[in-house]
Image 1: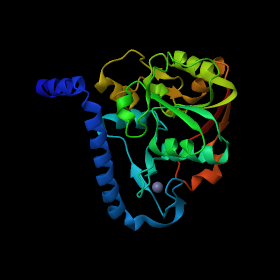
Image 2: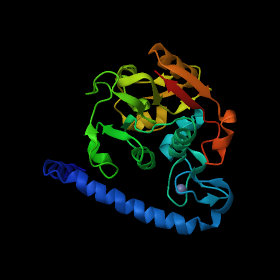
Image 3: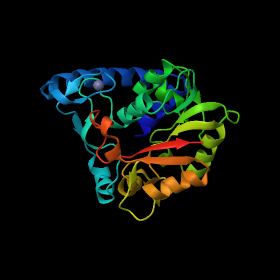
Image 4: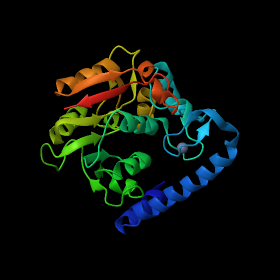
Length: 279
Ligand SMILES: [Zn+2]
């Protein structure tokens, strides 16, 4: 363990860690993609269509939480991107990405927009950057350099952008990681233009009575046990999350899963709502 962390520190100091990590991620994705394409060829058919690669399948690949995360996800019935039809067998897009892509393709136009895309997902970024100016940002930008080499180091609770700079902000499954999510929400509101669009999906539960959180917890095992992921600090209760956004002056329209029928063929997570959020 000591040797491993010493080696990592040396690589980081030589600025080699993230370039090597990028190569590793790309190689790993290439191999997994090939394995999935062969292993799940049997799913080819009708019923579902990936809105990234446009291939049709009778089902996508299911994804379930690991053993240490499963208890919190199951007990609290968290909508967090798990379950049937989660991953496209051809391009490996996730249900979380396909939901945002479906929303971008049907609910919004974003031609010539200036967009802040936090912790960018590859396929969402590729779609946006065809038509808009996309600024990508993360607290550890090196981790996303394989998606956008110009990604900026930004702290969501202290953004380096002037007020009303962006037409759209996207932070998909980010706020559940941030101790001061209220400060991050206020910052996202500040940098957005009036009427600007925010896409701020989070994992949530509708069966818990209040948001579960321990904002300053730093014990990855406990975080898995409590919140279903080693780097999460909360599970949002849906109505409380919406109230929090409204308290920060956003307008929020809840689009229930049942009303998103045209999205169902893309294999979005069963039961997941989409929040249409505007400044
Ligand atoms: Zn696909």
